[in-house]
Length: 162
Image 1: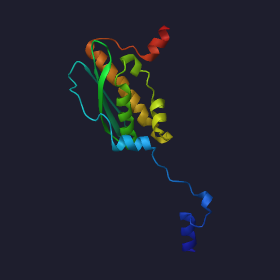
Image 2 (image 1 turned 180 degrees about the horizontal axis):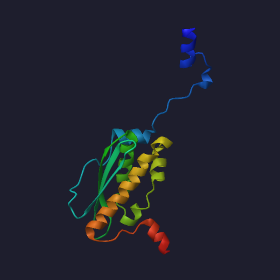
Image 3 (image 1 turned 135 degrees about the horizontal axis):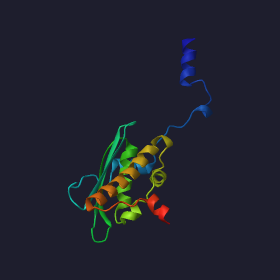
Image 4 (image 1 turned 30 degrees about the vertical axis):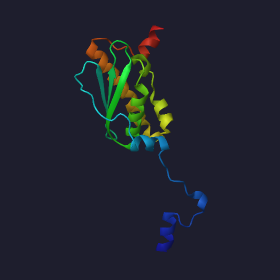
């Protein structure tokens, strides 16, 4: 009787079609986790650096993303991150730093978490990681603009003006 119950619990007596395949991370997540790009930190007091620090209390992920901006052109010349969290959070941070380099400030504000999640093929339970990356980008831009004494025009403000 015990042996029969154990087999039922473990699913050993069930047809193969009832077994589900194990879930794996997409190869891009694994790549960015094993070989993260742009890990590091800039001097937060540098006037050309914007720092975004965001976290998700529910899961414990904390992400710091920094951008370095060319003051003459407004282009982001460099970016780095430090993330404490799961592999999806680290991969999202790594992708975000790659995507913001070489772009204008206004352009990086259009990067959406859905694009990061789609690029990394994140499962639904890990979507908050890509949301953190989007929030970190916005916070870094806001910090940079605050240092320069400029108000930050969000994408929703620009849509309202049009």
